[in-house]
Image (cartoon, rainbow, N blue to C red; front, top):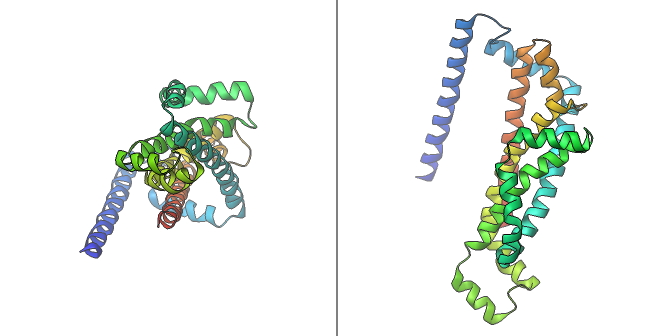
Amino acid sequence: MEKKNIAVSHALSTFSIVLILVAWQLYSIKVNNPHLMPDPLDVFKQFFILLGEAQTYIIILATFKRLLITIALATAFGLTLGLLSGMHYQLEALLKPIVISLRTLPVISIIVIVLILYGNTFSLYIISFLLLFPLIYQSELDGVKNIDPLLLDVLKLDCNKCSFNAIKMVFFPLSLPHLRTGILQSAGLGIKVLVVAEFIAQTKTSIGRELYFNRISLEYSKVFAWTIILICIVVVIEHFVARYLKYTLK
């Protein structure tokens, strides 16, 4: 039954992709202007040309390195503060205004303010961190809060609630599914925010810079090709993160 459901899901996903490509092709024919809407065949041709160039992988690795560093920092701080906030309501109350502010501020406002304050060198990491931290923090906090209260009562009787063993054996493992969701969401959001920041900051050797220069030079087939590359990167990241966390959960 499970295999049948997987097969149906794959078939529906394939149908959805085909439907998007058909709609894209029809709209391209209607517009009849490659500078406004490039043909799908031209875009995929450019996509494979980019994949055949060594510079493409240097650019991808540069952006990917920034993403990994940011996610690692956001996960470290989000996990630690989320665990502690889940066990101490005082810390949760203290961090609540900060987290809400970061989650509600417009992305473009954060990008512009940080670029003004810190310039183009370190601003990419700060921007991505400020947008990913609340997501991972809230996921971990929700995971701790959803632990069975009866289990916590037993834990209070057996040992100190805030001891390292309690965190290692109870709080962290039981909150891991929520943390997993937060990291998966941050992977997709992180690459989007990072590329937007690269686009505005004109960061050297970055996907955002490539999108900017291809846009101003009216090479929209390259813009679409880089967009497809970004989609592939997000899919690969989420796949490996999901497999790793699934293994860790076991």
